[in-house]
Image (cartoon, rainbow, N blue to C red; front, top):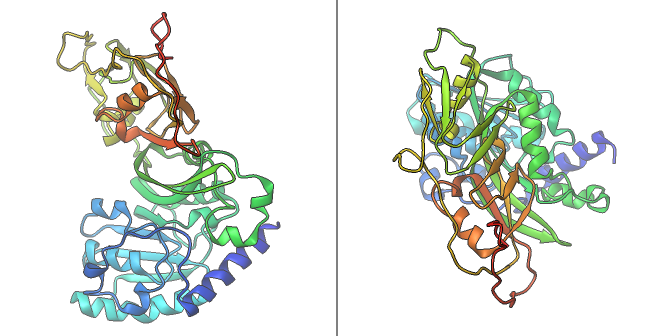
Length: 395
């Protein structure tokens, strides 16, 4: 299906939904009781995202926030409240009906918040060609919208262009565990349902890294729908446009603490637990972002760790038989490859079948934030417990 045709069909579908009140796309989890205190009902009833963007929890007063696919303006208006009257919010959308509703209500929201003027501006545009100046945005949010863009890699490049050095994104979207087949890709109805345009988690995160973002990691996920064996699920991801080095860093070495026994970061650097690795200032900045810093010691001199050191982290599987229950793990952390203590090699976004013991390991605190765990079993599994292999690898 031609790109222009996809864009037109999606725009028409959302314009119709705005007029009819049809509920679309993703499961919502907004705190409507809170939002009703300052956002008009007209806006609240046409909100189609996966919930209030998690990135708004990180907003500081005075920042500039961009919402890609702002619709009726619900997320922009919440951002307006959070950045305060000295901050700025830009919403972009391609649907005239949505823009009309958002613009009409901007002054109402400003008055409800006690602002003398609205700090929200709504612009007509596409996610892959945003009418936004280079390097002007502190935080980019998007709520189940990029999925609808035919060329998501162009969207990711646009996001990187408009982000300030040191800026960040937190976006929610629908992805899949397998490549969407052509019969769904060409289904117009399912484009509007956030299905046909879904990338695999691997392709989604790789596209962001190729655009220039680093430290990309999972904030949360939830299963959504299963169609013909394809699992579609909602993910919220955060990543950073790292700033250039301004001063010389004293950090010269990084030592992986764990719980992974080996990691490969987005720049291709490999780290083995407990062994100090010489790093560059650029690498030190990457390892300092919140999603990575907890796993490393960053030091001026090499520091070696072993399992007697309290800074060493490891989670060993139970010494017991395990069962296969249909679980698959997808690495969604800020690294492209990781290895656990049972010799599983996880590659970002790629489903790996895991047994019950490995599920228990990945649900512990050190691992859990970095994994999506899906169950592909179509019915209850009744297999007997099996014993791990003699070489120590699980099952």
